[in-house]
Image 1 (cartoon, rainbow, N blue to C red):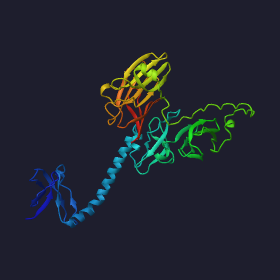
Image 2 (cartoon, one colour):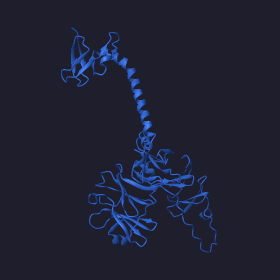
Image 3 (cartoon, rainbow, N blue to C red):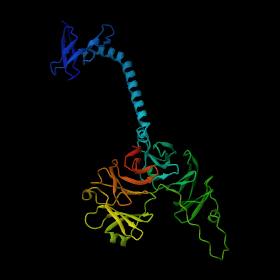
Length: 423
């Protein structure tokens, strides 16, 4: 009587089958399975009988020639099935990324761009967002990037500006229809705002301290030696003297020279322009607060810091025009359980103030909270990802939240993410 060996599909045990039955019961786990059959020609695998398709299949074992012939039969089928599954999964991912998560899904591609995160963002009049991207999977490259403000998807990405080490001290600014990047090595290049293509580049002999608006034809570069160098917008070449660039009337040499016009700084991504540092010692003593930031309000100021005495709880204080306290609140929901440090980031809107803090310690995800400017009422408080927050900014579409690797837009009323770009 013929005996064959089959493998139980449930526990993997080898089971001996005598005779020619259609099913076998595993003596180890008790699973009943359909025995997979083969023809006598080319050892082709036959499917189980139609009435037993729902049962697990016990694979019949044979010699090496059987395995080779079986591989030759199944390989084309497996390739076809694998390709189908891959296409289906890719199609499902494409459908998923078509919605509000398009920016995050795009980052799943090999060496996809991420948000650099150590700098801020420049928000254009149409809501689009200009900043820096970074690739770290294959090569460390930093580029200028323009994101669609409604979806977070990239409109364009420039050619590499350099590595992170080459660029993080550089300045990225918006000058009308140009984007100007000044590297730490005093190389200035201009990119077209429309597509990110390079227009020109020029080399200076001093590092750049400020980038100023010189009018329709000129960009003024103020170097670390306090010398203003006007450059032509069209070519980047020197535009003559500063007096000529700023249309100052020449004076006789013996008379005092006129003071140059104040620099009108171009918008940059170097820092969140809604924040300002303060070292107001007297105000801090009055509020019993170690002050971190003071932000202007239409009719007063908003002070951010931490308690001076006792537990150093992150705190916000609203002052009126006469520096009287309107309200004073603890930023964390659990003040005594929070990390003892000032709010990590702060942003002001028309009706709200938003701050980031650590609920327990800096090894756990940070929290985001928004408070009503009228009375300090906490409108919402959410966990915000798993990375430290470097930038908060209230924009027309919501709350921009920047961190290393990601930039996201959240609903200003609820804190719910609308889209995320990056990893």
